[in-house]
Length: 407
Image (cartoon, rainbow, N blue to C red):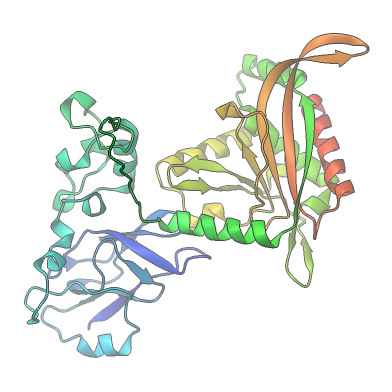
């Protein structure tokens, strides 16, 4: 019996998904667990598997188009089965369907029925998300690569032994300087992720009354502490130490670990730290849960895993849910100081700059110190200045005396 496959809700904020590529075409046999398509949500590119056995009878939307949640993606059933009644009984997808070759309709463009086998544009390249990420990093043009997976799909192994000398370099807006004096530009359709980032940050910036408090910490002891740990075989980054220090400070100032809910304030008793990770498409914020209960080493391992998943576009919506406080660290980009927009539903976000060697005064003497600036953005509906400054004071103490966090 034929069954409709609808666009699932793959994250809590998802309203629609974009079909990146179909991996089956009309008339193909499919089994439960077969990869049907790749779907770009507002948070990640995910693989959609079939949960039915049978024949792919109908595709509801072509690659590159959006489908609303619960819209028709495909119909799987017995070969030759009539599925017209299912189409009438199910909400339609938000784009024109891909029509089976045997369906007799006029004015159907041949390009529509062949989108799943075309490699003529970036939107229709049949490649896994990881392969696309590797190609982008190496500057490899996927049009020149022959895939070894099902239906010519390009996967990681197809790119492992390829050098730039063997393949055309992928085109880039800045790869060739414009010396003709002719004005030009490129317009790029917003990804689902970028749409969501724009919407959520706009809502945060215009609805939450932000105020900012900046403090400096002398990181000399933290640097010595990190070196001692490394000498003992325990390695972690300053960002890992920052996450631990923030979680420890939140325990003493729980009101910064809160959310504005309109007619009430939620004070979270658990501490889930969101860690902003930059990608080409924008920021993603994986969440280290119960960060205050984890050692710096545990935080380091988990943070590295999240960064690797984010860079390879393998991060899942569940990895980015539940944050109660967020950290955005731009120190590795040589940024001294900045302010960040609050990441809903949090009431606060901490912006962290680089560690800078600078003269400082200690006990009336000028010495060389290693200073780092931090700016806390707070929602004034929830957090007052005294709460914000008290939290930053404790955070400063944690960083200037990191061994105390282990007691």
